[in-house]
Length: 321
Image 1: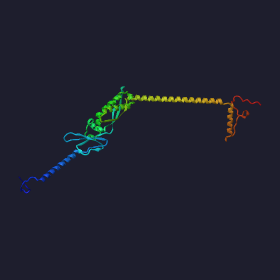
Image 2: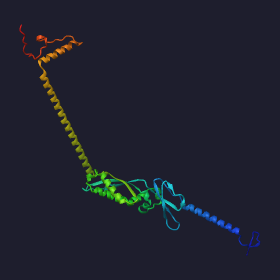
Image 3: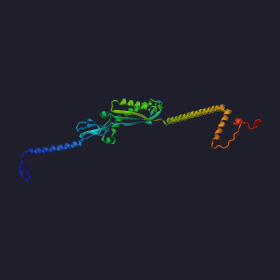
Image 4: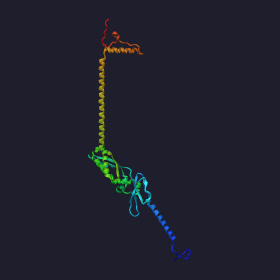
């Protein structure tokens, strides 16, 4: 067997040398390594989990099926690995509200339509994230997770907690008379909390509290209650005024009795000798006063002031000479 060289001369062919084969094998090996590296880079990832989340790690396969790989608590990352992906689940508390308004208002035991709202505080048990993902939620697309990171939790709440919670709240309100509900909000919330906790026992849901509030009665009932409250306040105001008037009357009676008693004492002590003594003492004070000038005093027998009463209609009797 022969082949033509560059000059067109015919030359015989020889078996391939060992060095040539080695070079060919090295070139092929390098090409395979480069191709494998490119494929690994394209298929590998470093899944990250932020703070407040627990990551549910899965490993995919070119042939076969995706399998659970493990969990990681944020903030962390798993390191770059082949076909490794993560679904992050928030384990921080959530507060969800359920409304019972308009057509969803609840009839009480006495057939009064009551509107209210239930607030629930809950979170995912961080030690049961695999159970949460495999039984209570669904895997979301990357675009939906980027738009709403808590979409997984919302779906799980809607699938497992929402309707039982609403049923328990409706039942607890229906057991009471309408006007008793507003005074029993705490017992109602405690009863709903106990029932939903029993329902969620063994699941991935931890219920912290249930609060019932924003109670609204029909407009005619609210108006009647407002009128009753206004009438009660008016009655209380009148009772207060009556009590004040009664105390004022008692005060005046006590004052009058005191004045009467004082007059009784004064009348019992006002004798002619006492009045003469008081008049003399007054004269002494006036004599010692710096503003004293002249004082005219009617003088009776023995030089003391005359005491008593004189009838101005008749002349006074003159003493005998």
